[in-house]
Image 1 (cartoon, helix red, strand yellow):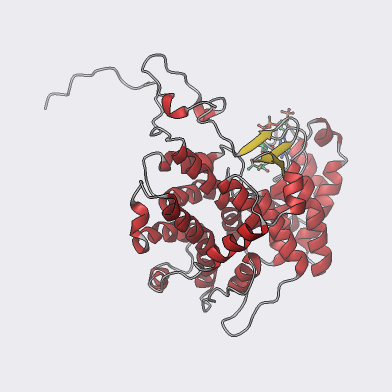
Image 2 (cartoon, helix red, strand yellow):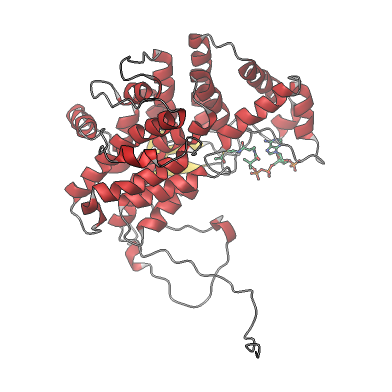
Amino acid sequence: AIDISKLRGESGLITLDVGFKNTGSTTSDITFLDGEKGILRHRGYSIEDLAEKSTFLEVAHLLIYGELPSATELAKFQHDISMHTLVHEDVRKIFDGFPATAHPMGVLSSLVTSLTAFHPESLDPNRNSEAVDLTIHRLLAKLPTLAAWSYKNGQGHPLVYPNNKMGYIENFMNMMFGLPTDEYEVNPAVIEALDKLLILHADHEQNCSAATVRVVGSSQASLYVSISGGINALWGGLHGGANQKVIEMLEMIKADGGDVKKYIDKAKDPNDPFRLMGFGHRVYKNFDPRAKIIKKHCDNVLNSLGVNDKTLEIAKHLEEVALQDEYFIERKLFPNVDFYSGIIYRAIGFPVDMFTVLFAIGRLPGWIAQWKESREQKQAISRPRQIYTGHTLRPYPSK
Ligand code: ACO
C-alpha cells in the first residue's frame, strides 16, 4: 500500500488540470468505479448486491468502517444512532431566524455547522476514535431530523420530533409528513424505494462534494464543518441538482402541451442547446448501474401509490420514446439515476427543493468515510497550485 502521507510534492513543474479531470487526489479503499463498464463497488461489494441484500445503515457501516456489520454490530450501530436523533432545543431558535422561503440546503448546511456550537469537543482534531464515532452517530442521527425540520419550518407547520421506535426511513418520513399528534403511515413500496435510493447515492468516489469534504477536513477542520462543506458543494445544479432539473423539464413539456416528440427532436438538433435532463452521464458511458437498479422500484412506487400525475406520464412516455430512438441508442444515452429518483421523489410528494436534501442524506456515509479515510491517511493539507496569467510587475501609479 502507498503511504500517501509521504507523497508530499516538491516545488518544480506544475501540471495544469482544470477541474481535476485527470488528476488523482488520493488513494482510496472505499469505492471502485469503472464508467466504461458500468461498474460501481463499495469496499469490493457490487452495488447490485448491496442494493438487493443490504439496508442503507448496513451500507453506511460498510463505507465508514470497511466491513458489513454482523447482526450484533448492526443492532449496536442502529441503537447508537437512534440515541442521538434529537437535536438541542436551542436549534429551534435558529430555525426561527430563517425566512419561510429559505432553501432547505442552505438551512441544512448552516445547521450542521451550528452543531459544532452544541458539541464543541468535536473541534479538537486529535480526538480518539470513540469521540469521532460519537460525532459520526450524531451526524447520521441528526441529519434526517434537521432535513425534515427545514421542510416543516418552510411550510410554517409544527415540527415533529423523532420517534426512535421507528426505522431510519419511517422516522424521517414521519418527521417530514406526519403531525405531532398523528403518525404518518408510509407505503412499504416507498420505504423500499427510498432505502434503495439512499444506498445508490451513498458514495461515488472523488466527486465534487466528497473531494470538498476531504479538502475542508485536510485543514483539520471538524467533521461537522467538513460535512457542511459537502452539503454546499452538492447544492449546485451541476452536482446534486440534476433530478430537480428533470422535473422542471417535464413541467416545461407539460406546460407546452405535452408533446414529447417535439422535445426529443429539440434534444437531437445540433443547433439547439436543449438536452434531455436525466439522460447521459459524465462517467458512465454505457449505462448507469444505479439507474438499472432503481428503474423497477420506480415502476413499483408508481403502481403502489396509483399516482395520477400528467408530469409523470410524460416522464414514462419520454423514457419509452428515447430508448427506441437511434440518436440516443447510438450515443449510449440512457436515463441516469437522477431521472428515476426525480420521478420517485415527485410521486411520493417531496417538493423539488427537497430532492437535493434527500441526496445529502444518502451521501452522508460516503462523505464521512472519505473524511475518516483522509484523516487515517494523515492527508497533507490540500493546496493546489496555479498558473498565474495576470499582469507582470507594474509600477504603482503616481498620485
Ligand atoms: N440529450 C441530448 N443529447 C445529449 C445528451 C442529452 N441529455 N447528453 C449528451 N448528448 C449528446 C451530445 O450532444 C453529444 O452529441 P454529439 O456527439 O452529436 O455532439 C453526445 O451526446 C455526447 O455528449 P457529451 O456532451 O460529450 O457527453 P458528456 O459526457 O460531456 O456529458 C452530461 C454528460 C453532461 C451528463 C450530458 O449527458 C448531459 O448534459 N445530460 C443531461 C443533464 C443530466 O442529466 N445531468 C446529470 C447527470 S448525473 C451527474 O452527473 C451527477
